[in-house]
Length: 292
Image 1 (cartoon, rainbow, N blue to C red):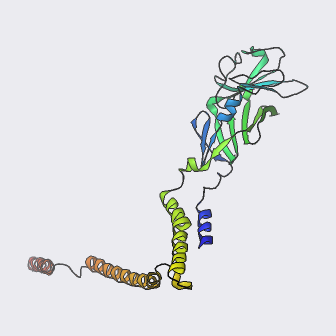
Image 2 (image 1 turned 60 degrees about the horizontal axis):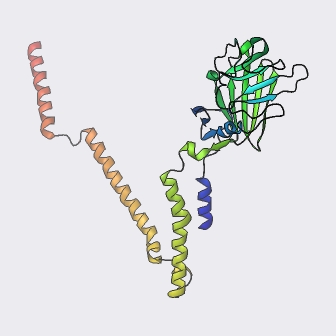
Image 3 (image 1 turned 120 degrees about the horizontal axis):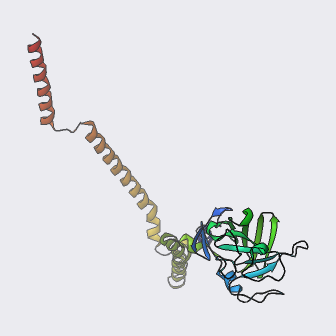
């Protein structure tokens, strides 16, 4: 019985991870509902206030990183949940709400002049999908010169985010850190029926059988099956179930026969049937007289 209860608990546990590519719907700027899971990016947002790099102190509104490209040595500015503020803008950009900006001139500071920067995507074009229970991807288009950027969020040890040009005009920003995904919250949690089965099969039934058997064995000196609590009831149970099935079968057949007779006209009102027959005969007689 205990093994059966554990098996049942395993079968009705939390729902499986969302399949790869499950589309997401934002519930807030930092939360995304993706099938059976809700992802929370607020942990990445909070880290902006404490995580800087070698040449940039922490900033509450954006991350800054460098791709280390010897040819261009590009800097990137971006935030994980919302568009960059107007203070971090690229002059002349077509993106009204840029999610990431690339700069390629040394010494420039925000807001950036138009000949030194390009927006990589616009926040209004956001499309997010769940790659797994521990990975979320959000893609943004609408950047300057058809640029497009994908933000990849992965659960793991906190690390500085990285940005790179994967293949122009495609860019990638990668976050690793406190990605929170909650399957039960998005799926609505366990139903009342599931909770009842867990409590009944996993707790109440084993306690009832085990405790009752121990009491009967210790204090009534019963042995084996005879010590099972209310053993006479359990012996009668198969017969009671059989009687219930037979009763249900007979009552179902009676109902089916009643409905069949009702729709076939076998139980129709005799007076109504006679009136219809008389009316049919009278019509025939009148027709024959007119024909003659």
